[in-house]
Image 1 (cartoon, rainbow, N blue to C red):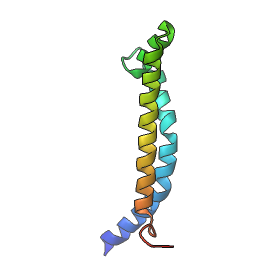
Image 2: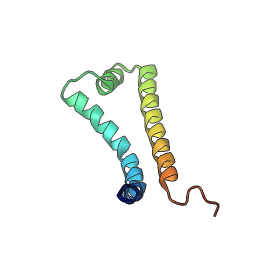
Image 3: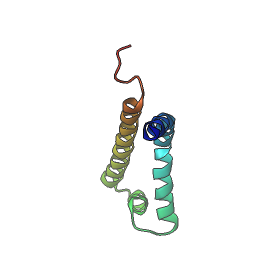
Image 4: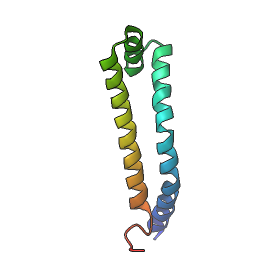
Length: 93
């Protein structure tokens, strides 16, 4: 019985934590790109900066597309998890 009670509490906690975390994902992604630029680390941030300086439009668009798709997929997964964890998700209203 203690395992069921702890899962119930954990599931109800995740319902509120997942959307907040998912909404912070774009900030985390853009902050990681800035850290790459500041500390001269190879990655998407450095590649984006070089593309912006060189006016390489296809590369800029591809990096923005990849970033946007990543964020959207993570938001979808967070919404799906919140729906599946909701206690009344399987019931008809």
